[in-house]
Image: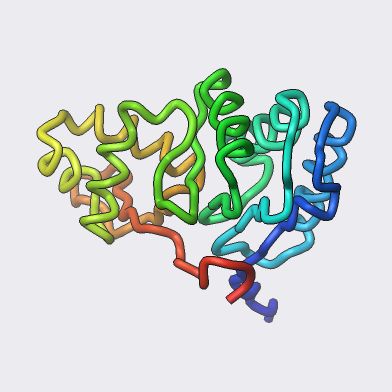
Length: 193
C-alpha cells in the first residue's frame, strides 16, 4: 500500500535572492528554485510567494520569475492548489502588475485579496467566487447573470492562476464533467500555517 501524500502549505521567500532583483538570469534561477521546491513537496494546498524585504525588481526579473512561473502553472508543468503573493509594496506590486498584464495573466495578492494583472473582467468574478465560497459553475453564472460557457472560461483562468481550486464532483447523470470550485486554504497570511 502506497503512503498517502500529505497536503502542505509552502512559502517561498523571494528575498533569499536579494533585496534588489534584476536580470533574467537571476529571475530564472529564482523560478527554478521555486519549481524544485514544488516538485519535492507533497501535494501543495497553498503556495505563498513572499516578497517581504524585496525593495525593487526589474521588469526582466519579474517576467522571468513570475511571468514564466504562471505559464508553467497554467500548463500543469508545476502544481499548487492555490497560489498567492504577499509582501508586495507599491513599487513591487506595480512591477508584478505590469508583467502580468503584458502576459494576459492574473495573480492573487494575498494581503489585499485582489487580483493583479489582466484582471478587469475577472475581478467581479473573483469577488463573487469569494462570496459563494464553495460552488459550481452554474451557480456562479446565475449569480453574475452570464452564460455557463462564459463562467467556465473565467473559472478556468482563475484556477490556472491558483486563485481558485477545483475538484471533480459527482457529475450529472447524462455524462460529462462537473466541478466544484472553492478558495484555497487561507493560511495565516504570513508563511506556513
